[in-house]
Length: 63
Image: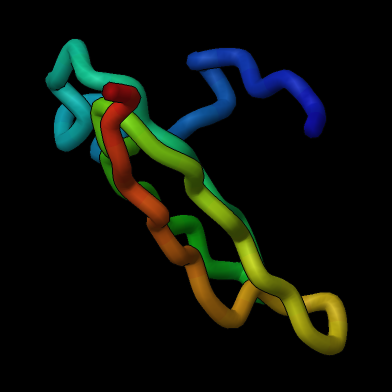
């Protein structure tokens, strides 16, 4: 993944993301989407034909 500088992210997104929890930004086919990451688990980004088709979460806790 390449680094993004905050100046390159539109200010509307920065206002929307006023949170301390970790997030993931996904840019595909001219669309930028974001989601919060689960506190425990894995996040998988699925692609097909050079486009993101799905973001899945596998949550769990260690015993």
